Image (cartoon, rainbow, N blue to C red; front, side, top):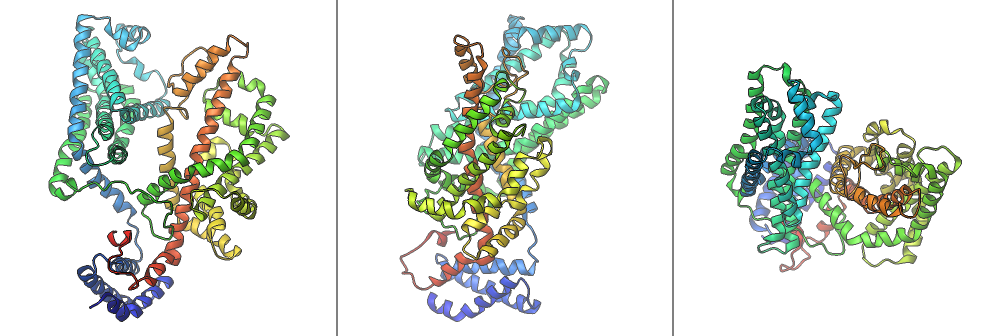
Length: 640
């Protein structure tokens, strides 16, 4: 049967499905019969029209009927377990040689550190510093070699240690992008330090005591560093050995593989922080058998999940092991907005859209918001000059408070806050303009008409977001994270929708509620990714104790730059901290300008995904083209 005849013969039945799907209800017997017919049609299409759009369309229909039969039960939890049960072990198996190499390298440096300490007992001072070695010697003399582990409150230790563990593991991974050199440096540092540290305790006659204390948490912590090293080598090899891909494609594929391995480490890093804070903290109170048991169980879990289980999964699913990696899609100028996207596709499209349109977004904001930002920051720095003459515990938090007027200590603070709401509204409109006008070239006349039409509406729709950002105390912001998705799609629905004004407003609230879980997950994951990539440069862990001359415990590149400016300025002014703080503000503003568009772009793709589920506009468009294309004309959808 010809494809056109097949469509003509069954199209009324398919239209009936669309009615049932729109109403989300119907006679159970009719649904059951229709489900049987649709699956038969799908089987026929898979046999005779496998590379045609009708096959894809029928597959969509079958899925919709399945959802009606099964009351649209959520599969998100099952997918979550599938990732940990299958996807991650497969990636670990694929990278097994890199992981083994990282382990051998780490052990080599650890042995070298121990041997060096044997020949030169003062070597640990060069590795860990005189202060730490002297403190440890004092603790050994007092009969408590690991007293450092119960020198602080347990809860504070847990957060500090867990954050530091994640930081070290991520840096070990991400610095592999520099042809694996950065990863090798971290493996070298940690391996030598471990070997020297343990042999130092051996020379003092407390090796077993230190071993039973340190490795309670060290089994997870040190293993995580080694595994992160393997992920970093995987990442760097994307540059070094691209194979049949371009270097950029190979890097993207290796980065995705490495990130999956890093994702598997998160529970172990948290567990390491918990054990160090709540178990190692009280190691003197524990019997030796319990310490040995914890250490063996921890190593056993690592060996099982990273060595034994990946082999089991690989033997069970050999097709996944040897599955060819599809090179990242080279996006054209225009995106198909009217199609359903998985969570991963939305993320991929968000980054691709950003790469294509960020130039246009920056041009708009350089003209419409940058002058206002400069005026507001200069006014704030002048009015609160004293506040930028010293460092803060969390510098980034204090600088944003100064620049944006969070303190609301004066009328100027209030006016500046209102100015920033305008900045955020224009930034969103510049992104939404990119969705409506996907051509790369910016037409200023078209944009100004678009902006004039939507500026006030976007500002008003985001009013609740502004309230939570500017007026809610920082210690309540965690709760606000769960409220933000309820208002997330209001502005984007107003701008990108084609319905009446009232319907667009209603859709904004309705779509926000329907996409609540997806939005919350998107905000969380996107924030985590951006935070991890930003941290080596400047952000959350730029911590200072207020001492102008002391290096922060977790320095980043911005700390080095600010210190350089501070040292130069000391030769010209007594207020040498002011230029350093202004340098920090400039970096924070650049970072904000580059990062916020990601969230607005994600807004747009979430909106179109929910809109497509409600209207099926993309499917209707495809349906209209059935039977009209020539046989030699194929589209990407034919191969989905």
